[in-house]
Length: 144
Image (cartoon, rainbow, N blue to C red):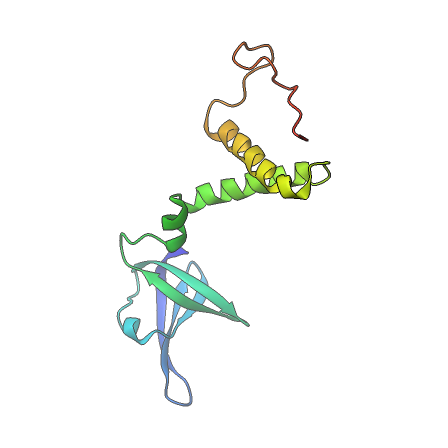
């Protein structure tokens, strides 16, 4: 999550534990990490992760400027690209769900199909029917 800190409240529990509440993009988030208390200011841009606990959103990680999120490091892609990949996987899975492909092979075929969808989105798309580059366009049997 990214946003600008609109407002900061300093709070303390009945047992004396200090925490802060930030308003970011109109939502309130609590911060309990002592290392960050009193360091976040109104107007500051933040990138962070949070976890919902009941009605509360607790900040679990604040990223330093230039620090990549862990999930971006793992796959080497940005969140928008991850969303596209997941959408392609979901679509491929839906298409192949009722197929006669053995379960042991279905995951591999789903990933292959998802990659074709990604290629279609990011590159020039599939070849047109009758195009000599792909004479079997439209005739490939994905159920194999």
